[in-house]
Image (tube, rainbow, N blue to C red; front, side, top):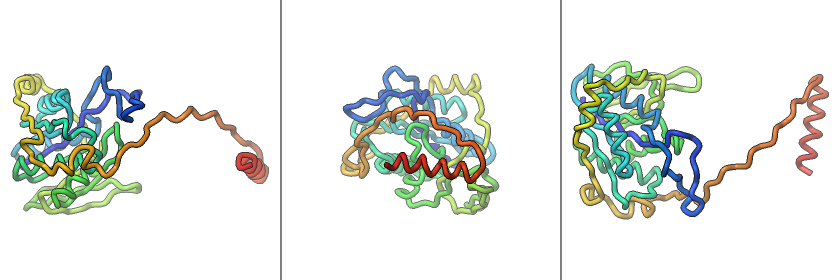
Length: 260
């Protein structure tokens, strides 16, 4: 199988600071890691390669330092790595990001499967994976908890639902977004770390991808962040005790006081 895993480098901590002028995260001085959900995508890609043969290409869009995330992915069993990086891509929302990544995937050539983590820990939108499938016009299944079978250019998977799961069969090529229930990510091996250290990271800019300039970066983003702020800490509430009619009466009284 020819598998592509899309990952993102994110801040390791949730205690991030916001630049009040640009409304973007201040990443300087904050350690970055592979998005936790993407670790499960990497592991599933490597497991499928080990079972069916083929190769796993890891792909990310980001600044030059995102190369560290790609090397870590190689140490975990991925075969090749591509960094999509250009100042022209800066400020991309989920739509422009998925468009840019889909352009890189087209340049990679034929593939059987794309795997993404269900969402990124810094954005929490869960939109980039489905966006890639839309731009590529291929089937997608989100929140996949298990790959049951791959046979005759089809794949059967279990999709996590609020109450239980559903079994879906889709034709390949396709895109999956996976949840943490799907596997247990491995640790890098010594051999993998040595391979990652010397691996060549392919870097593609707008020049190599030749994407529509009106569809990338800030210009190609139909949504923009107008303001980001940390909400004030909420004051502690109160616990109402007593019989149900008494508690209901107290609650109605409190609500009325708040309204007025």
